[in-house]
Image (tube, rainbow over all chains, first blue to last red; front, side):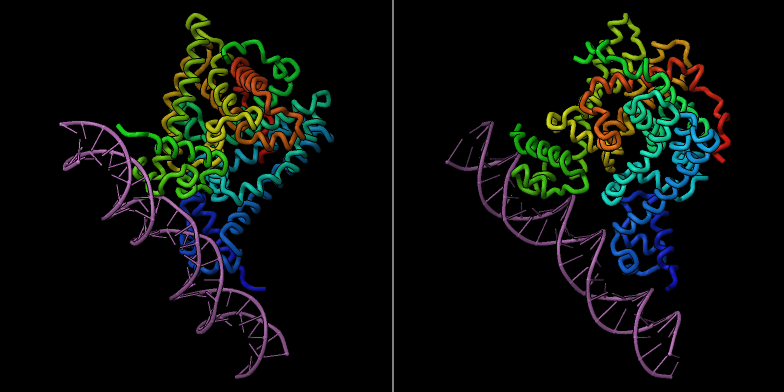
Length: 223
Length: 223
DNA sequence: TTGCATTTCAAACATTTGTATGAAACTATC
DNA sequence: GATAGTTTCATACAAATGTTTGAAATGCAA
């Protein structure tokens, strides 16, 4: 067993650079310079550049998923095996938002890296992404326990929209700030979480009246 | 004035290739091969590869924005200068969803190109994107007319969430299909539009009770 | 210390990339 | 039909990039 110094130095440097400058702009030579190691070290320790990126992303994804599940489990235990939809959704979107928003200078490298991931999707990451479906199913199951009467379709849409709002807020927080001239405070993370959760939950609990709307009413301006 | 044949052939070929294979995978040589023109033609007619991509995106963006504004105007005229929030939101998200979803084999190249844009953000496009804020302001203004009593902050969030749900649905329709095992029909575009619109509108009209929630209630599982 | 395995290093490699060049082909005007 | 302007073409260029190589250095056990 050898010293992992080089390995970890590369990982740290790569994450830092990707977080700051994006995937497109960072070359292996940038990474090894930042890490103060030899150019060949990346291929020696990781096999290829793509595998380095993949390892970085997998590590962070696992952390994120673990945190989500921890919150979910805690919420279900609190409720005696059944959590409120709000709590389930909060466990789903909370970690993402908490990790990726908030005062810019306080964001961890890991968080900034994950923001990059959500902005610039790159092949090795896209391949991994497709595996998170099993993870999401656990939240669908929890939602099913929360809202026994609901049809699965509604639950899927609710979860999808919750993730959509969270993701887009992370990804486009800058645009929202500009558009609202600062009136929307993207640094107040907990408020954003509640906002996303409440909208998503509302769409679910009102689901039977509203979101199943017949869709034909105003179809005329769709000509 | 010369024949634009080469120019348009390049544009068409590039859009087709980008739509099918993404930006990362398509080289100038691929494009000129597909267009049956010489390698130097791209630089001669467009200046650079980035300018070609930019022109492609600008063209499609203008079309999208024009369509959105047309629907908005029609809705406001119908309502005598004031449209319902639903109608405003429908004008905002309808064109995107209508263009980018629906039966896959019926999607235009333009639509598939715009999907790519939303998945793989690439520098020349990101630069242009920042200009669409003025366009969005027109929708905020219309929403202000629809809901005179509302605070601007709520309107911004409502618009942001509407776009978020639409965008993410386009971008991740495949994941939603997989997750729901086909139970969520991403081909029924009009139904999706109504779904997005109703959720966003609900978050706005109920805004004063729900989306301004104090956010502290369950903050304990956010430790 | 000797010997063996792991790790580091400088250098080179092999491609791929977008772009530039300068001559040839073409087009339209007088 | 000569000429000037435009467009096309084959080819070359230059730079960047991920990867490989083989030798040197290092660590470590016997």
